[in-house]
Image (cartoon, rainbow, N blue to C red; front, side):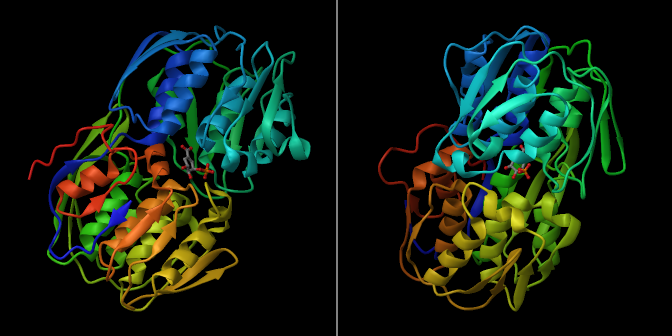
Length: 445
Ligand code: S3P
């Protein structure tokens, strides 16, 4: 992908593809429910398509056309033994949440993913699932995929405190908890995204939150529903950062999910001096949704640490890029989780910014960016990490000279049509190789 410097402001009103986390969950809960679940606004990105593929192999009929999905629920006990290995591609959410469901099934499954997935830690899910009675084997004592999940004689409920705030771990345990013989309680060190809890309640499950704990009881059944998925704030974040750093910009992103467990990026960009307005706040299927208006702003560096981190963990690459255009220092701490994402994101961000002439240093649990240095175009290898590819494409909009993002196809994991969409706002980003035609976008501006 080639990004040219943007010599004029970005202007327009757009929508971004559906929320990745909510899309995964809608397919999963729809599959386990009684009756039909229809999903509108589904993200047809590679990660969520991997979830659909896994459930088809587990015997669920799913019809997907673009962002419209129909799932014929088989009920909590209706999944069938797959004839093949379940393959999740690059999707950590698919493998970790699915492990919670598979642990309770009366058949054996083998689940794996791409090279990045096979490097990422699965012990954080496998260890508590084993404590519930699950039998799971894999490399490194079950820490790495491929993983084999064996049938057991029922799971027991658990009262578990997670060492890291992870929605994937919490969700896996809550899903296993639906099948357990007693209640399951998960307590986190800080609140992580709560889409599973909201959607379980929406599908009729008795689920309760108290402070940092959430409890689910063994379920008799879920009821199929109509789910409308809002735009993904993690995708919108790239457009927000672009509008903030390119002079003369004003962009409205309609229909963005603004669940408070996800809006850390807005809080931080505002604290950096960003002119961001939330308009038309409403509720859709138990999730808050709004339009977000962003205008170019002079940014200043800040410190980002503590319980806000899980609320913006996926947006740190693009926040770091915004920080490179801010006055002063931005320090990000308490974010060691970045090292075990789709790539080691601390290294990827710091190396990329340095390659572009920026001033960034890695810290053991985060990074420091000294803003204000002019960036120059460079050739950046995304290392197959979609958010690294998009973050450096945004940096390229304000870098002198052309920026080339290598391995940019990975953007399809979460934001198919990224280059086309941002081009409708006036940016000059061209996707090389395979054409960027998955989704048609409208610029209402
Ligand atoms: C996700 C949870 C987060 C996030 C990931 C999606 C989810 O991961 O980084 O992109 O949908 O539950 P962790 O649970 O590892 O923090």
